[in-house]
Length: 560
Image (cartoon, rainbow, N blue to C red; front, side, top):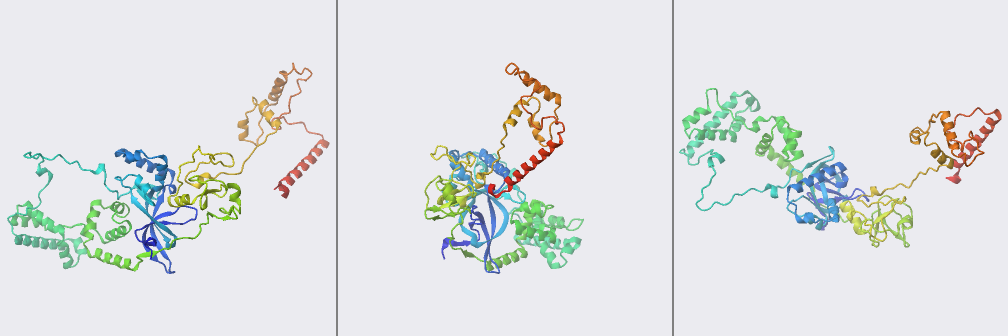
């Protein structure tokens, strides 16, 4: 078996869910064999920058900027070029708590994902192949970003201030009594046998106290369970503390164990928690692991964080923990340890095949379409004109292509190598069908341009009416309600007409003042007098002929 093609739990791998989209980055948690014989991988999801919203990207960039301001920026980070910053964004991922099951046959290789290390230079991630980093946790359901709880506390912010070394003979100014408190003296006057006898008396008092307590008798009805609870560390700590506070005097310490009100009952978190709370804690621990903040927030909000942590370490000493550990070990034995996935060598549907020296089908655009429209185009990423193999990239109508190396970069890192196309190249920037330069961003969606256009061609009479009636009617306001004719008084229109003709009387003296220079548009003319009957019939026939010609022009196959 080839070691490179063997995959186990804990590996970071590439998954392919689409032939044209970039790979998915996942971490294998389990390998399970289904009833049909296929192998499925339970994986943890990682998201790229292109997978989350723009507002969250701005929040992530702000968080990274604040982190840099708190630390001393290294010279390597200050010398990053635009290309390196562009490619560094392709290496950034966002961890999530989301799990999903994917077929193991969709695995396309291994990668490496690590928590962002503040002590390393960011260029180290670019120097390593198939290496990614993350620093934030993305919640796809709540659409939020949070800092990872597993942050490694390395760097100048987490260094202790070490005082200077004392010179020989110099006294220490620290008061030891204020720095620590003595809880037990190993050189006490009591012997080990006397101390053990006192602890036996303390356990007996604790057992008797549980018999008198109603809640404890219900939880622990048998003498055996009560004695076991009384022998826990909380009882022994109380007994030794009592003995130390009374100067290791046995008679004085015994009187404190059984005061006048009754025996002292000491209970820890294991006794304070109910059975239902313990079951909820085990369920939360199975879901979140040792993330005690999330356990408290989602499952046990009435418990303090200190109580939950203390209960966890006590729970690890019980038989319940040992039993669950054995069950998990048995389940792990029944699951697959490793799976072998052969190298995927099937041709990609986006691959551009060459037939008789011409480009073949590209994204379903039809035979020879790529050769006719984009056969001489360069790679959209590295601008190379030669490649052993080409791949179609982006919408079919744009007919863009990538070379082999840039296609693999797109599939692995989810972007193009260059941030934008330089202007100084001989072939110039690529332009759309409307002569608008299209910027090469990291996604093919941004290059989509429509080929449909709308052109309004006005007649000369309409253009003249716009200039002649500019001071009478506001065309922009009239355009808001195109189906309602503007109300213009007749005297305003006649006054406007007389004013226009009066200015031309010196050049056309034979022109009557009542004769307008032009016929106003239909929406501006006053309603005409009713025409004679013969005129109405002729207009009706003319309208019918125009309508027939219009329908014939619109629905005739010759003009389709």
